[in-house]
Every structure is written in structure tokens, then in C-alpha cells.
Image 1 (cartoon, rainbow, N blue to C red):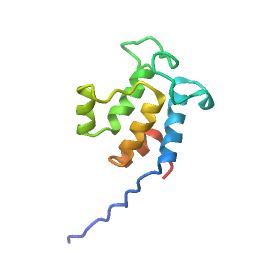
Image 2: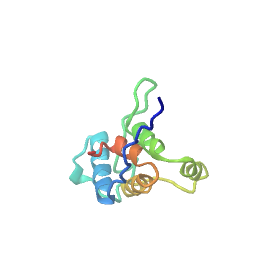
Image 3: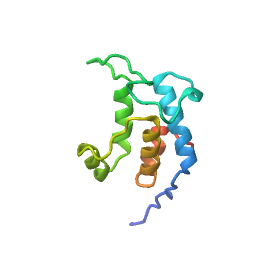
Length: 115
């Protein structure tokens, strides 16, 4: 007996929710208060990571994983060519917003958006 399984409708998260949860994610990863983050804060300057280790991911590794997990092939190619460089909190938030229309499930998973 053949039957179709309905897939749940994919809802694209609202931009303000993605931005808010992006800030929350960065605050959680770097261990800083969410209110202390500004969109101009730069990775490596205002936001510093623990020293790299062979055995444990540091904050930059985690954020880099987030960025790559939500990106599609085209965005990954832009990153490889140096056309897209994410250096600030604002860049990270905008990247997540951009990818939320491409891969809403991945962005929702990475940022732990409510369903």
C-alpha cells in the first residue's frame, strides 16, 4: 500500500527573532552578558576566544561551525573567495538572517529558535 507522508510546512523565522537569538547565541558561546554585545564588536578584538586546542573547540571554532552549518554552497564559495568575511557581531547576525530564508531549519536548530 502506497501513501504519501506530508512533510511539515517550513516556516521562515522572523528577522528580528533571528537577530535576537543570534545575539543570545554569541553571548552564550563567549560567556558575556547579551546586553554587553554591540553589533560593531569584532571577533578577536572585543570578543576573544580561549587558546586553540587539539582536544576542545574554542569559541571561534564553534561560531565558525555555526556559520558554515547554515550556509549553502553559493555562500560557502563566497567565503572561500573572500567575498564574504564575517568579522563582527553584526556580520554574524546578518549572515544568520540571510541564511534563514535559504535553510530555515538549520538556522532554527543552530540558534535554538522556538518552533
